[in-house]
Length: 161
Image (cartoon, rainbow, N blue to C red; front, top):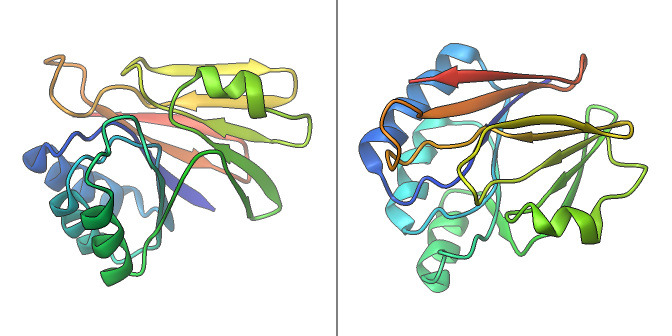
């Protein structure tokens, strides 16, 4: 299973449109957003993907009622971190802030995803793959990226734009 991983979109709608195109080209089957969506219009833009999207709240997701309404309208799941998913025989931990990993990461997690710091991370903590695709909100020109996670091979690929 190929999963699109995105974080910290911060309502940058032109970049979200590009991310949707990248995920379509990569043929992802699901998308995980690790927080800082910021505005409901961002979820409206992601709805064009026509694949399930699951997200956790980030520290800049203050417009909760609007985000919840948009998620509900599009059949998306949006919740407080930590989120634990069981897909394709893998256990995935999703948080926003990497400091949350210290609180919630356990031996049974195959993958841990985070965002928050806009820094690309591919690391191993014991048997767990830790991945943050990094910047995609246009705050650091030339560093926009999202990720594709292959759950069968437990490999993360960076898609730069």
